[in-house]
Image 1: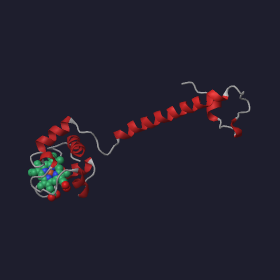
Image 2 (image 1 turned 45 degrees about the vertical axis):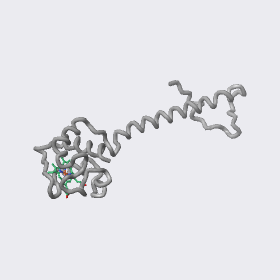
Image 3 (image 1 turned 180 degrees about the vertical axis):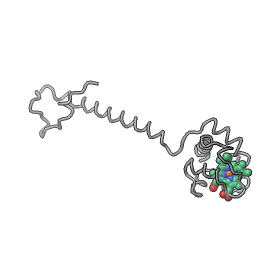
Image 4 (image 1 turned 30 degrees about the vertical axis):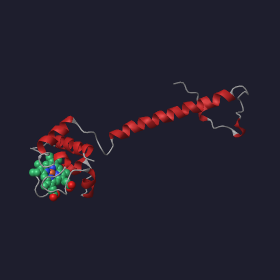
Length: 142
Ligand code: HEC
C-alpha cells in the first residue's frame, strides 16, 4: 500500500495548516488519511486477536480428545460428573475450586490421581493424548 511519509509522519502544525500545503489540498485529504490509519490499526488489532485466540486459556475440543475421554474417563466421569466422588466433578468451577485451571493441571491428575481414580501413566495415555483429553474437558464442561 503506497504511503507518503511526509504526510503521514509529520504531526499537524498548530493552526491546522502545513507550511507548504496549498489551501486546496487540506479539506478532502486529511479525513481520508485518518481513515487509512484507522483501518490499519483495526487490521493490526484483528490480527492480534487471531493470534491471542491461539493462546486462549480454553482450547478447542478435538474429536480425538472426545473419543479418548469417552473411552478412558467417561465410565467414572459421565458428562463431566463423578460417579465415585460426587464433589470432584470435571466442571470448570469445581476444577478451579480444586486448583485445576489448565490442561497441564488435568494431566497432572491423570498421572497422580486422588483416591478412587485410576492412574494413567505415560505408557497408558501418552502426553499428547493426555493433553487432548484435558483440552476436551476444559472446553466441554464449563
Ligand atoms: C475409576 C474411576 C475413574 C476414572 C476411570 C477416571 N477418574 Fe478422574 N476421578 C475419579 C475420582 C474418584 C476422583 C476424585 C479423586 C480425589 O478425591 O481427588 C477423580 C478426580 C478427577 C479430577 C479432579 C476433579 C476435581 O474436581 O478435583 C480430574 C481432573 C480427573 N479426575 C480427570 C480424569 C481423567 C482425565 C480421566 C480419564 C483419563 C479420569 N479422571 C478417569 C475417578 C475416576
